[in-house]
Amino acid sequence: MPAYLVTGGAGFIGSNFVRHVLDHTDHSVTVLDKLTYAGNRASLEGLPAERFRFVQGDICDAAVVDSLVAEADVVVHFAAESHNDNSLRDPSPFLQTNLIGTYTLLEAVRKHGTRYHHISTDEVYGDLELDDPAKFTEQTPYNPSSPYSSTKAGSDLLVRAWVRSFGVQATISNCSNNYGPYQHVEKFIPRQITNVLDGQRPKLYGRGENVRDWIHADDHSAAVLTIIDGGRIGDTYLIGADGEKNNKEVVEAILTELGRPSDAYDLVTDRPGHDLRYAIDATRLRTELGWAPRFSDFSAGLADTISWYRENEAWWRPQKAGTEAAYASQGQ
Ligand code: NAD
Ligand code: TDX
View 1 (tube, rainbow, N blue to C red):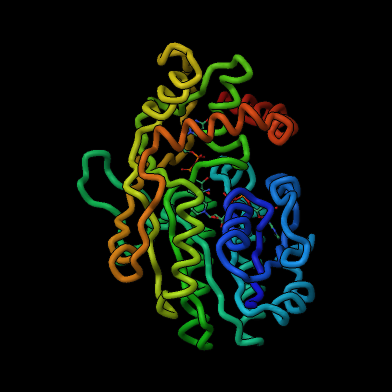
View 2 (spheres, protein in one colour):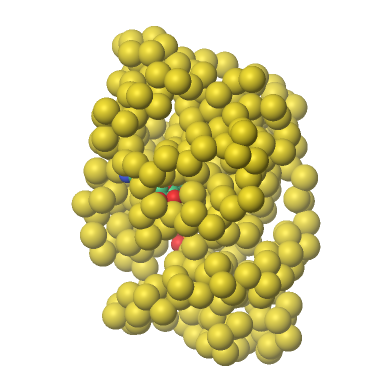
């Protein structure tokens, strides 16, 4: 029974991955999570005690990391400061967690010879023009725009260096924008769903024309497990489900699903440095490892996600007022 150590397992995608591993394998899972504002113990309720353990701690704490890595067969590193808007308000925790935290984990897996999978983002590649037929591939040069994406890019480069210099047994995945249940209300889709549920108007940055390539978090989790099982050590795999939509289309779909006029939104101050478009070419993952997304119908996945937020107000309500106050202070 392989033992997985999952960092950031109380966050949105990490908790999805933990449930996925427990549902689809016989592996045991230890979560290491600091429970920052983004971590929520409630996202891991009801998991089987004989195969699941939760440790509250910081990935920058070398002693805690070393003792947990020593017991693990595989480390899957999700923990990060993950929100672009926060990184524009205060970059410092991004430098600490995304760079020093990744370095701390790499030193521990190097010492113990542990298999390591690094979770990253398509934002490391910068952005694409709206009318450009190109998509990101594993060969696209790094060109990150924000404090968040530059620290994620730096963490990816640390992993590549530890593979080459020290023979660390690592793979890397760069995924597009995720949606689904348990996502913090600071992020675009849950923010707009909970705004409408609260009788508030959705807020689109700029003209709402920026494009994101949406993938359901369940598909991301399945892809990560596929890469851990079959990926080539030292290699990078892009994860995406051909889900390009502009932000206006997504807000209109949310409003329509919730029975509101599709134009009942506000255009607000744009994000500084706002990336125009992301798009992933996941050919390598599909052809070499045989992965395919199961949630190819975005409208159905969005409708399920809206139902989840409607039915789980107790999960998101404590996040909402503080998140909106921070946005309001910036005219967003
Ligand atoms: P999230 O913000 O929902 O969760 C992050 C988790 O990490 C939280 O539980 C938090 O408590 C924990 N954490 C933060 N700092 C920590 C520290 N120093 N020590 C231990 N735990 C710490 O993030 P998410 O959206 O689930 O993203 C998870 C990972 O996936 C990140 O690495 C992110 O860059 C990557 N990613 C996210 C997306 C997306 O669309 N959300 C897309 C591609 C890649
Ligand atoms: O209120 C909003 N209005 C709005 O128009 C918010 C919160 C966002 N937006 C726009 C900005 C983006 O174009 O929606 C799009 C998505 O925004 P976010 O949810 O903040 O995601 P993004 O900045 O694209 O980054 C996400 O995908 C890649 C995740 O937060 C990252 O962790 C991941 O690496």
